[in-house]
Length: 113
Image (cartoon, rainbow, N blue to C red):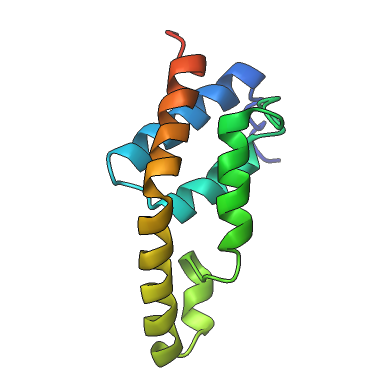
């Protein structure tokens, strides 16, 4: 029998979203990788219509063809070089908008424990 899974509340999900926003701002998570995490948190945190969250939905949608994580091992090395350059350019073009969205999410939802 497996251990019971921890049930996360909406507030737990929002804390996770704030953590991801901070990680994006300090460069520990790339903008696209962070956007993909954010989109996974938008419904559980009840923020699917939040304007700042929608920035990440757009980033995720516009970059869904760019391979990140484990899936990269299935890609040709030469193609990955091209995709990595495309990712770099895309993240640079989205940096100001993404950082502003992170700052807005943190300002609205960062709550002390």
